Image (cartoon, rainbow, N blue to C red; front, top):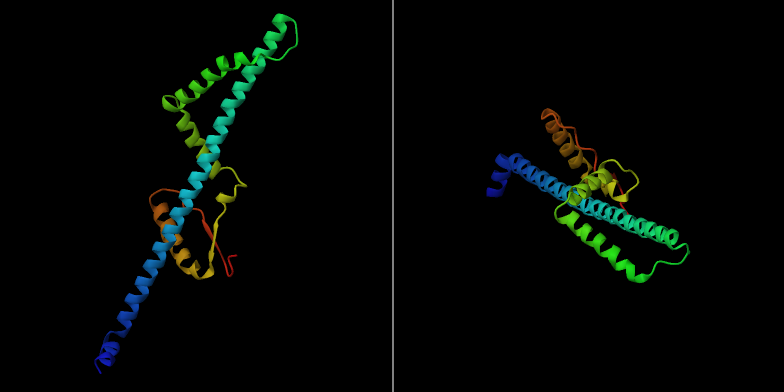
Length: 171
């Protein structure tokens, strides 16, 4: 009898509270997914940017070694390979320079900028593509994106681009 009276007088309100709670919980999960995607994208693009920086340094080393080898061949007028005992005298300063650039130079800023360029401007990286989410989340995603982008626009910011797509079977 009491259950009947509670449902009769408060049924709609209880259902509204349940639906609101469900929507908040799903939106929270969407935000967690978005944050995880962003963390993953930053980690991967930073690794790529760091690798590019390392390749630039290694290329400089090999160009220097090639130049030394050519100058040596011209000086002794004989084409012979560079003796291995000279490599440490060139390699060690490059290694120290690489570490100095990381510690006191602007290496980290270059890697950060390159990482942002990879994420924002370069196309073709799989991690820059939107995530595929179940179609059941589309309604909540659309509502969140609409409210978020309206808020960003009102603050003078550019709106977020879509970070998810929806499919019935996301395999």
